[in-house]
Picture 1 (cartoon, one colour):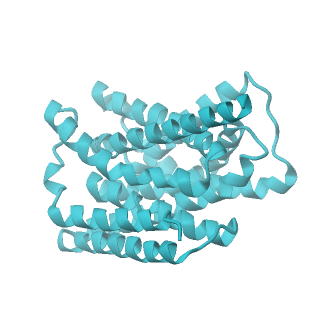
Picture 2 (picture 1 turned 45 degrees about the vertical axis):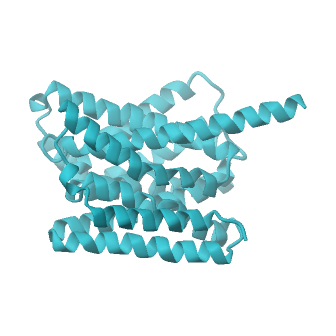
Length: 307
């Protein structure tokens, strides 16, 4: 009886952790947009984010026992570093730089659909009629939202495409990381994943070149606060909390919390604009985008519906 209560308590903590993750992410869509490209380029922002988070992870890990990855798991760690950190972050920040916070929040709601499909391929989770229908409707909503950017400007369209790639990449990461959680602690997994991801980020040619050209002395204090929020809150805490949730919940359940991000983004867009903490992006919230958002929501709901 006591074991069941402890397990239920851990599950509730996992749900709370995932909700906090998406609340932090929702605010970051608006906050990060205010830093790029006025003060730092997307590539430099990513480098600062990954270096800062990797340092914090290793700092904490140094006070605990470290179980080195087994040789048979090294390749999985490498893929997690590539999809979960390098490709994911590069596409997200470059996409957000070209698109709008609202579009990025809505497109991220596609993640659970990708996770369901990839879980079927790699984790052998069932693929039902409702899940297939949900994938189709969700993909339709995301495509319509992306095409909506064409009427605005070509850069926005390309930004939405990058955000879709980011969403798919993160889905790969969630599915690939799930088996690692059965053998290693969340802290061990995320520390090695970020260290490998940093290596891939440094391989991206513009990163070091743009870093050397950045005038850090001209970055105002409020921008540094936003950068620290992204590094500590949206990187260090979110990845750690995500792996904690993934340890106690399925990949599909963990990813389903992402559908709260569009709502969070809209709330923080109005809140930050009202208090003057960021630029006013409320004009990018249109009825047609809200309609596409609900179409994606319905698709996500169907992917989790039982027969």
